[in-house]
Amino acid sequence: MRVLSRFCLLALCLSAPLYAGTHSQSAGLQKLQVDIDALLQKRSPRSEEADLVLIGRLLTPVSQLASLCANPALSLPGNDSRLTGKRSVIAQCGSRKFFIQVQVKAQGTWWVAKRPLSAGTVVHPGDIEARSGMVERSLKGLIFTPNEIIGQTLTRAVPAGQPLLASQLRQRWQLRAGQQVDVVTTGDGFRIRSSAKALGNAAVDDTLRVQTRNGQILSGKVNAAGQVMVFLRE
Image (tube, rainbow, N blue to C red; front, side):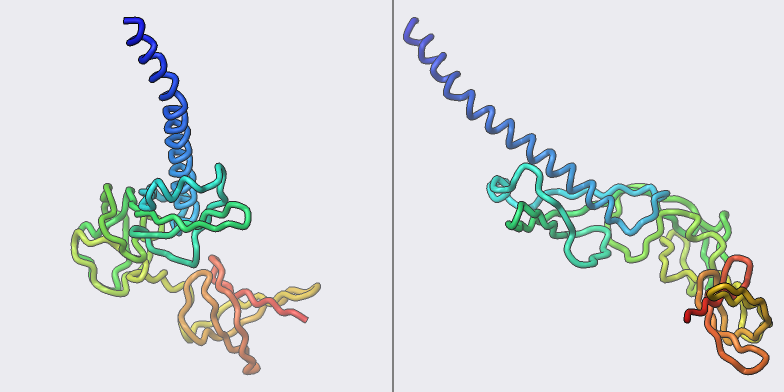
């Protein structure tokens, strides 16, 4: 009985460091997972108002992650705009660089056509409805906030139940070709208002070329008031 007790005590003592090491490794992986999820969310091309959560499942074997430092500097290479799919995450530990493979999944709320919408339709709140869940496939330009849709014009037909994409939308023209527009020209110490003819269609924040009465061609940005703002530099 005494021998058995000593054996149990020895086994407990030997297993304690192993448990501590395993527990520490598990905590390190959990922290790495949280940091990667935060990085994915920060680099998401969606607006802050969007109901969207990105989750990255680690694909790199745990044995390869064991050589990472405690607090690696994480970054995403390139300009990958995909919402879901396999991604690489760079983990920098001093001069050493590691590449971690992750499978990115997304969960959120996006917007679909409530009824068939034809090209040229100006989208109203009653034309769309929300869908929530896992984003099963990475649709480029999928929209997660209704404010990015309402008031814009469809460039192509969208069947009922289909998600609305950024490539299908065009802002309503603020100014149209041939229209007389108000031009505000500003420079170092001066501000001049004049009238000119629009040489194309333009929405808010678009750059528009205009022709003044004396034939001069200027380019400026259209503001929400319908003015063309021209900034001259010396």
